[in-house]
Image 1: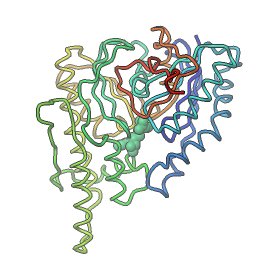
Image 2 (image 1 turned 30 degrees about the vertical axis):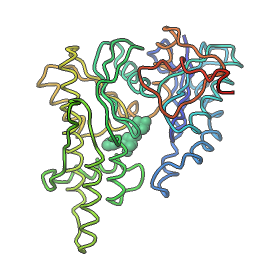
Image 3 (image 1 turned 90 degrees about the vertical axis):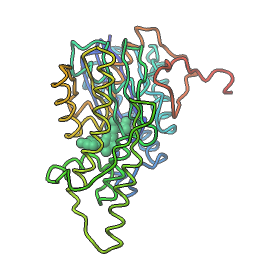
Length: 347
Ligand code: KG4
């Protein structure tokens, strides 16, 4: 079964074709990230307009590079939540048109379920149950993945997502948006013991996390130094910051995995590309005898192959949508995306 999928929840427009949920036939990504460097972040309306300008060509390219024609597509999957609402609506509307024109089912996919599914593409023999950690620009969660479509959040950030925190810290260090990867590179030459940064806990919620205090601490260090006319060693601060994020995240993921007893952790999302997080996860999993699945960097960020992959399992579970399917800026991971039809109440 060949699934054509679309992803447009933020500033990547993506289209892909995946066979039987596992084999990537094509994976086309148009990143707008460099267009937002001058603004220091994504401007939702500009992102929506850019999606609109390129999505049709990306769809054609994905089908062509898959070695198929339109008649070879068996279903259309699309991210309909969570994300920037205008951006999501572009992908969703296009996917509806494609499904209608091709006469195939329309399959809605939760963006974070898609991130987890990136691991099925990277590790062909991987199957639930396992513990997943999704660390991206908009979300940071630890999930109990009991089945391909039976997923429960067991820990999450109470404030900022880890990626958002990386991007804000990078901005105050003078790095262009999105600064997470550049901060990671800068940290390689820094001393992580140079700055004492907070590693907060959430009382009564062992697996929950908080990153906003850490972000504020970095901003204050830089601003205080500026006011005194001092210079901050940016590499040291980047290294200290990366270590603090990892120290908040990794022990909670390991504790959740220990509790589940599955013996497998999968990582996903853009921040899963972070070298410090990858190293700490690998070391901790080695010590605990837990298998760690870290997808290649190309599958960590937003892409449509992961949406096609999860779409395959949603389709097998019968999670098909009608043409009144809506897009949602937020949505619980537990909720099946198809259960959210706009229905007549929205008219
Ligand atoms: O998963 P993703 O591509 O998009 C969302 O769904 O949010 O994640 C993007 C986030 C950005 O905040 C970016 O700065 C961060 O992932 N990121 C990194 C690294 N590479 C990307 N953060 C830290 N270290 C990296 N190497």
